[in-house]
Length: 250
Image (cartoon, rainbow, N blue to C red):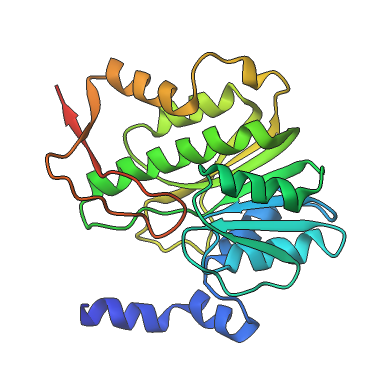
């Protein structure tokens, strides 16, 4: 850990503000700023938070939806309880997790999916960025089928190859798709947030998944998502277990 990183981390005003106001992570203010710009979350809504640990976004979402709403958080890691939220430990792709979500919903529709999911940072931006795109594609593919028509999706992604393809795929499924950089994001960060509103009723009739559309677009550009030669599997810090991939030109 470098001295420079430690000093910047300690001096981070958003981190200090989070501690003072009882939020578990500085990222809580990113969702607050997204909500100020695009008031997606509403009182009484049912929200699914994918990759919820340590719970900062879950805290903000429960404040907005109030007692009449519900926030369901899913993560591979255990998350300390958040009042007003139903937290699930597991992989959202697992049938048992899907069943647990259905039980928590009690027949109510999901209004919004939020995801501050991030890859396990390797320090190689090409790998981290590729996995970031892959993660958001998987979040969309596994949550849009249970998202209510007219619903919304908010997700973090790193800028780079595949982002335009991801945006295009989401525009085929939502009426409005915006890119947004919260003030609370670090100046040096390449992250942006994609805010998708008004899920189209007939999105399920599309022949390809979001992930397939991204891979097809990258292939046309001569970019392949290729698994590395080693067999190591490195899980992201939240949300899914994924094989590391690199972007290579043919």
